[in-house]
Length: 285
Ligand code: PMM
Image (cartoon, rainbow, N blue to C red):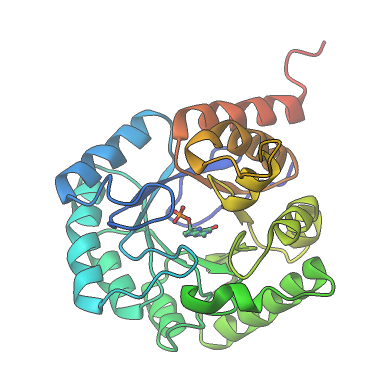
């Protein structure tokens, strides 16, 4: 089992759990629930109590088709929540594509920058991350939500995603980010159809070969709903795909993922412990 030391994130000798707090009115799976800052903070603390190692705070929905929010609105949404959670000692990541938001977030106490565009959306992001010195999630991304579905064209998705991630990482390194800051994520559901998501999960080993900790964000995504469609082919709503998320978590942890990003923390926190015990063979005499 490979264990990673990521600056600013406590080592756990198991796959970490990142709990999601979307401070948005329109996110795919939990939009509107934590839009009020006090509610968002309360929810973040609840996720920690349930076993989250990191709380990921985002102020911009990235669901397919979503329009962008303004910089001012994104800052208004995330800054007070990040500040309050950080003051409570929570390890917070900021889910943003904007360097200015990342900067404010780091000043407010965020320990990681989670950029779903891997630096493509804002050319100032890599420099900012280099200066801040915080871990940086480079996710595979091909374009903004409004038209990302048209970009889901691959002949060999695993090879192409690994290669595009490697190029992004090279770019980010060239801007001064240190190797020790980099985390990678295949970006399930981002310019990907269900079959692409499954191929990437089956290929976690190849993603590990990039040489950086891998994050998997499968929670409540559409490929799970499609898999669990009823006899008429109607996809299972995301509100009833948490058990499937859990199965992905156990398998991803077993396959060497560094972290899973999930909405429903408690059972996933159990699943990563099961995977770690399984790998260590605890209980076997
Ligand atoms: N997915 C979403 C948002 N941020 N960040 C990372 N690193 N990986 C992901 O897969 C990811 C992300 C979209 O999911 P949500 O809107 O349901 O939270």
